[in-house]
Amino acid sequence: MTHPKRRGRRPAGEDTKAALLSAARAVFTEQGFDGATVRTIASRAEVDPAMVNHWFGGKQGLFAAAIQLPVDPEQIRMTVHNSPPEEIAERVLRTFISVWDDSSGGGFAALMRSAATQESAAKLLREFIATTFGTRLRELGVDHPDLRVTLFGSQLSGLGLVRYVLRQEPLASADVDTLVATIGRTLQRYLTGDLGLGGE
Image (cartoon, rainbow, N blue to C red; front, side):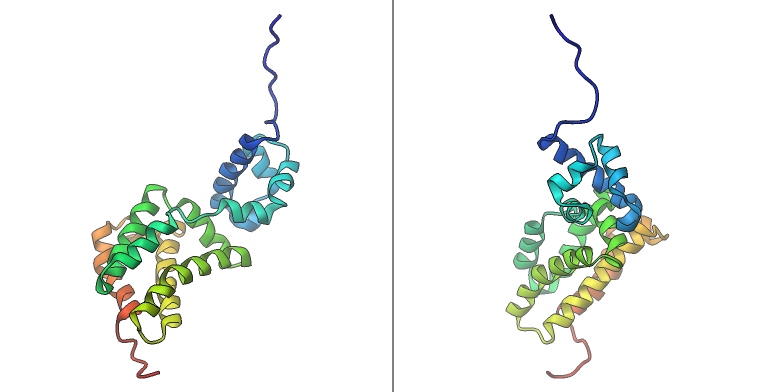
């Protein structure tokens, strides 16, 4: 005798974890960290809210696991290290915009929404930028490498905020070539150009 398959919440397995991560990315993107609730995320994933604690230790652990830059960090690292110094900004900018556009800003939009109020989100963004670009700048021997990385990160983060969170026109719909032509030169100056600060 065959029994009909029971409907209900997912079992506490890897599929539950994946469902929570998928739901969390969507809810955090839509509502930011403060607006998102464990109950809402669990409901979206069709799992018991207790599974958030089981798999991630709570809302903040789920956030840290779910919010990843929608780009392979190794891909960016290789782009930075394999590019001629004068082309780093343009190549990185093209890579970021292409990936962000493909996902409509997705995880990065959520990260930007939450970084202002949640230290874990801010730390994710700071560490990604610092570790990706800091080593390369030190290899190049430029002055003020820490300041340069911070300036670069502020410009790149600002682009993500305006294009994908605020969706302010005409920047929100500008094509890649326009963004590279206008923002790329500023980014490159932050990395390797004259900052107007004189010597060390």
